[in-house]
Length: 356
Ligand code: SF4
Image 1: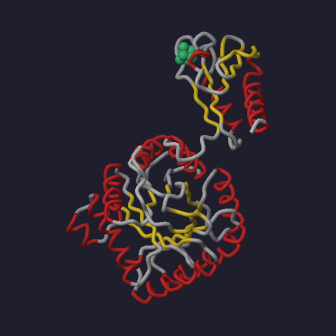
Image 2 (image 1 turned 60 degrees about the vertical axis):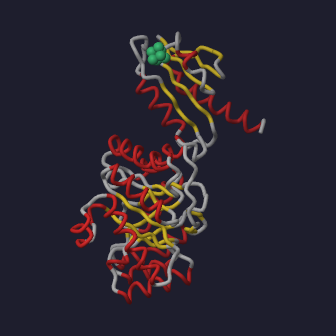
Image 3 (image 1 turned 30 degrees about the vertical axis):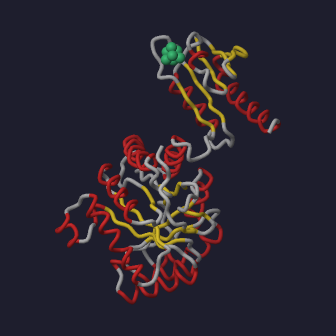
C-alpha cells in the first residue's frame, strides 16, 4: 500500500475527514426526508452498521423543515444534499446539518455568497463535485467526458467557493466507469490538497456494484488516495455500509471485526455450505470484536485449511468438528453446528476481553 496522500483536515460535525484521519464510510438514506421517523430509523440503522456520516436528500422545503429533529436525534453527523436552491442549503444549515453537498455552479452569485457566509460562520464544510453523467455543457464539448473533464468540472466548483473566500471543502468525482473515476481522482489528488470523497456512481446491484466499487475505491485507497468513501448500490443502504467497511478492512484501514472465511467447497463437501455460512454470518452480524471465523466443508482438509482462523467449524456427514487455534476441540451434531460455533465465538471473545 502506498503512503497516504497528505490532505487538509475538514470536520464534519465531530468526524474528521482528511489530514490523516481514519478513512470513514458514509451512506445515504432512501426514505423521503420529510418522513422524520422513517428517516431517523434508517439513519440509526446505518450508524449501527458502521456509517460514520449519513447524507439525506433535501429536494424541497418540507424536507428541509424535517431536518432539525433528524439532526438533533441522529447519532452521526447529517449531510444535506441540495440541488439548485440555495434557500434549502440555508435552511439545512439552520437546522444543524454538519455538511452540505451542492454544486455552486448551479447557484446564482448571490446564493453562493449567502451559503458561503452561513457555512463559514458555522464551520460547516461543503462538498462539491462532479458526476460524469452531468458535466457542464461547455466542459463536455471542449474536453469530452473523460477523467480530465470530470476533474475540471470539480475544480471549477472549487474555484467558485475559493473566490467567495471559502476553503472548507471536500471534493468528489464519480463516474460509473471505474478507470475514469480512478484517473479523475488521481488528477485531483495531484492538483489539490482537499480531502477526497471516493465512490463509483451508479455502480449497480449489490453483486456487480460491490465488485466495481471495490476495484475503483480499493485501487485508490491502495494508492493512498481517499479520505471518506461511499459505495453506491441499488439496494438497502445498509449493504453499502457493509461493503464499504469490508473495502476498508481489506486494506487494514478499519478494525477487522468478525471476519468470516469459508472454503469454496469441492467434491469432499457433504453439507449445504451456502446455508451454513449464511446462517453463521447472520448470527454474528453486528457483533463487536476482532476474530476470524472459518467455515470449512470437510473434516479432512478443513482443520488444516482453517489454521489461520481463530475459531472454525469443519463440516462433515451428520455433523462437524469445532476448531480453535488450529486444534480440534470437539464434535458437534449437524443440528447444533451453527449455534455451537456462535457460542464458541462468543466464549472466545469474552475470554479475550477478560485477558485484555
Ligand atoms: S475444506 Fe474440504 S470441502 Fe472445503 S475446499 Fe477444502 S477440501 Fe474441499
